[in-house]
Amino acid sequence: MRVDVTELPLLNRMAYDRVAQQYETRAVSDAINDVPIVAAVMSAWRSRHEGTPRLLDVGCGAGVNLRMFANEGCVVTGIDISPEMVTIAQENAPAAQVLEGDVMEIERRESFDIVFAKAFLHLYPKVDAFNVLNHLTSFLVNDGIIYIATTAHQTPSEGFENKSDYEGSPARFRSRWTPGEWHELAKQAGLSIVCEWRNTDRRNNKNWMNLICTRD
Image: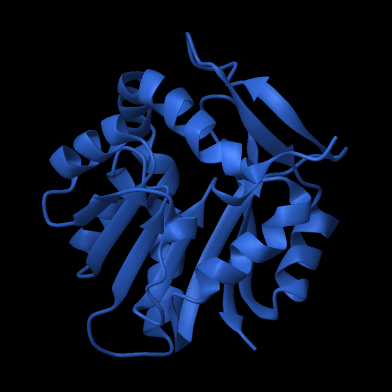
């Protein structure tokens, strides 16, 4: 069944507003998992550039990654569709500009050196992921880099489901990608993979696929 993507922002806002406090508690305690991710992104950028990078964190959640990148010297901007998440992110990352809204409705172009999109693309149907990724890369300067990540699965699937590892979460859309599909998405979007690796979430044993890419 074809999903009406115009309904997804409202569903995502409801879901993440409801679990925002749980999400913050977990994000702060699990921040150690993202230390090597932040290091890899910064290494990829610094190997190509000097100066102060401007970074956009898409679906910034509790703002933990915003704070980590700010501590690395980045000028950071976050955007999240959940008002509750935005409030929390502003508290956790006071140096960041945090916007409330749907990134797909923002037309800012070529404004950032780095786009950071962890656990974001899998909130959309696979048939729409190409357009979403293209929109995210449009925020990059010509020589910028984009980080994308999702969990790895042997069997592809997608549909509406509850966020089972959080109490009281309403259903939201989730797509599950195989490694081959994830690579093909980047390729179709005209991206060159400059760094890739896997890491395992220590809390729930989720296996993450991480790609750092440049535009061809």
